[in-house]
Length: 230
Image (cartoon, rainbow, N blue to C red; front, side, top):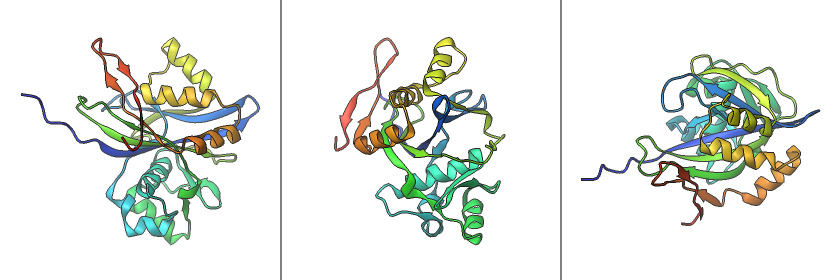
């Protein structure tokens, strides 16, 4: 008897990118060696929580998109994990809080996060046979000037701004552990020379490509590209 299919949990990830003297860089973080993503280098992000679809979120996060709760989750997780709040006035330091407390404090301070600044790049769904599954939206956003990153030491152990190609090289050398979606999006970024190029390419993609990796007989994952309506 086959095990019942595990429902994919909604999630969101944000690729924060900036231009530098050495080319375009992206912010990556490394998770503590525990849980499903233990030890992996990833982009900031996490699961969509009930607060992300609440009236409080509507007050704090600018935007009215069909995927609004995913955008809220991406911005909330970015603030929680890195201490960076992407607001309508630029990137500022976020209060060291989480969830409803974070959004309530931002509302009290009159700070609005900018959901409209995010551009959807793709949607990935964990293979059906996996014991833990996510249905994740990947967003990209410009971050020209940012305060110092303050990582959530409970979930993360490190962070770095890196050229996409350098991160891929470190993964190939075994220095950074990554999983398929992170690698794929770093390759996507590597093909763009500037932030403007990446944002333009993301607008072209607009999340229409649903990526559903399939487990092959040898245990490897083959990414299968499907139209979103499928």
